[in-house]
Image (tube, rainbow, N blue to C red; front, side):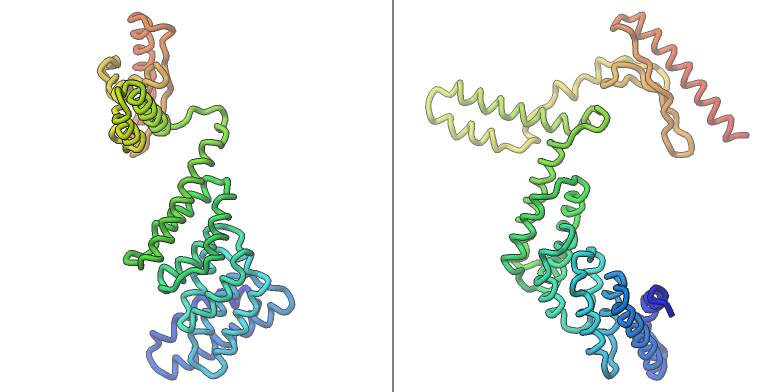
Length: 330
């Protein structure tokens, strides 16, 4: 039996003993699971199997109640030495699912904490040990994780780290909750820096929500500066300080959001004025999805040009409807 096949069968069988119909059947399955674990460990001496296979072998061996099961689990955990850098977050979760002593798993994970390749794997160790195990993280592990977060430049990886921190179980102790908040703050700050410093792909315009956020920040700064200038005495300084720390929701963005009343109306569904483009946008809905027909921008802001672009947009909309709806009905 090849190690790859043994791993697949082990994944299918190691959860079966608790639901087996009889004790004899459970004993038979335990023997099969032990043989599969032995096959994976024997293969690790020649060509190291993937870390996920070793993690599964440890989980299966730690759940056995037969003689020699503890030795199998120890051998599987020992086979991971030198491969901790290849572990993923899902592999760490498999290790901590053990029904045995998870403290030994945590000890080895913290001993090799600096070898993990990504932040999510480190967070998986902390979540399993601190968030669910109730213990406290070593200071060295926390410092290592904060340094790793500061070095990440990928917005995707930082967003995934934020999501992992939000998924920590509720009802944590004060120490664990403080650790989660500190890590979440660091990840958010680094994500903001990464997105601001990242170049625009293809010269695209940033999302509208980001522009509104930047505008709100600028408005708050201007209001605080104006308050400092117009303050008749030093008593106005606290008000300016409060304005700097006021939430973004308190800053009106009416000049941007209230211009919709001045936009022209096409008089037809599916043709609307696009404020960012400065022209007519044509869309039709086909089987629950939006199909873009294009944009029709007037040459200038005169009523004649706006009307000319509107007529062209309506013609495009009719063509799209005929193309898609006629095909569906046919």
